[in-house]
Length: 136
Image (cartoon, helix red, strand yellow):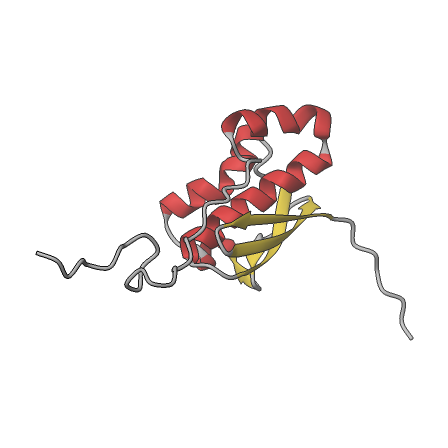
């Protein structure tokens, strides 16, 4: 049986709403991928690029690291913000003393826990709506 080559990476999970992103951060130059596709192809456009690259830009390490991400759940925006959260967490694990403070100051290490409120019984099919009163 051939020996597997050990690849060094730092791992963290980023979350937003119902999206969960498992992020591996590698040192060096490479193509960042999300679910096996290049990150620019998975999240096309300038605004999504600003969001996922913000952790790298804050620390000024854009060309020094690349990521491999597996993301599930949620919509595209939730997944995008989960990826940014995961990248920020891996960078803070890489060098806690140097990287954590600037990332925390920008708010990239905070988990956005806002999720959809569940529907309640007897509320006319919505979370907070009350059924209409039959009285006049």
